[in-house]
Length: 187
Length: 187
DNA sequence: TCATAAAGAATGAACGATCACTCTTTATTT
DNA sequence: AAATAAAGAGTGATCGTTCATTCTTTATGA
Image 1 (spheres, helix red, strand yellow):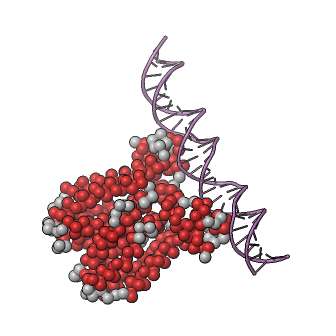
Image 2 (tube, rainbow over the protein chains, first blue to last red):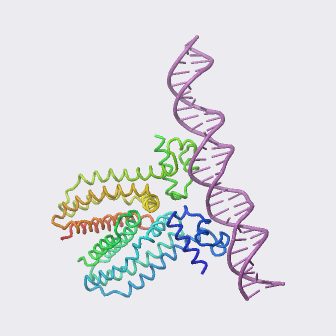
Image 3 (spheres, chains in turn brown, yellow, orange, cyan):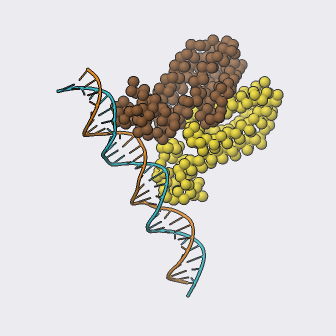
């Protein structure tokens, strides 16, 4: 599909130059299409940004579905295997785009809406897993731990992006250990 | 000083439009100065960005010094008071700038260098506190916890920015609880 | 004391490049 | 031949940056 072709090119450009630094002419060049042709599939540059955010989080959505079905968190080893799925977050190639999206969400309401939507889904699923893994914890405490897990996820994205020398595997290990601690801790 | 005047204006514009979205003419208007005048104090727009990053983290540097001196973490209450100092991170007004900086660090080597420098300082100080608070923990484990604390800090910034409805106090409480857990946990 | 010279501070029009976007023209397909 | 796909030059606006110029202050000489 032509749309995907444009989004692939836009992703490359946005990663290298940011949403506002990248230009339509360079996106067109990367997509091997003309500028005018792109405007037959997207009504504006902003529309491309939104579509790219949607696509980026669609991948995460798929991950969440898999995570949701895998809820046998009886043992620590299970939890660790479960958490390994979150390697998605720290793909060093795509993490910068996520960070760019978060930053843009602070300015662009449409982007903020996309982010809010996926955030809610993430919390729903995480909350369920958290409750089933550590029964008897007060709802308030569950929410606090949930918040911490969300922070750890976003923080991992931030670290991968800002510190090029950081080892993704080490970051993921630290993430897993911290989340495991949050899941199994007694009330 | 005129430089501060420019940086204040630039901060306002960058917050609203991002580093690449903001223009020199709008920055000049916000600073109530002419464009040409600005170029007597900064050699380029990029220099303004770098200077703003430096200034942003200089505030954090001051915080770190205070944190360093306050190392009586014998009790949970002490830790909590100590951690309260980190409210700096989630000032909802300035957090978006931090996120913008992190995102830019993925592209701009000069920004990355500033980020790396402050990151090292942060870790040094945190590491010392961590070691003194929970003696006998293997160095490897200390580093993992340190990494988690850094992630939590950055994640807090990200959440505050991307989710305008999030309550800063609630986020900070979750952050504190999670970090406390990481500090006091046995080996 | 007052005119004038020198120096800095400040301006904003102008520059070439590039921006997002449109529109006429050309290829290609049916 | 009709319809659709694709191209890319052209649009006015705006970009970061420069620079000739003016304003403001301070210093100097008579």
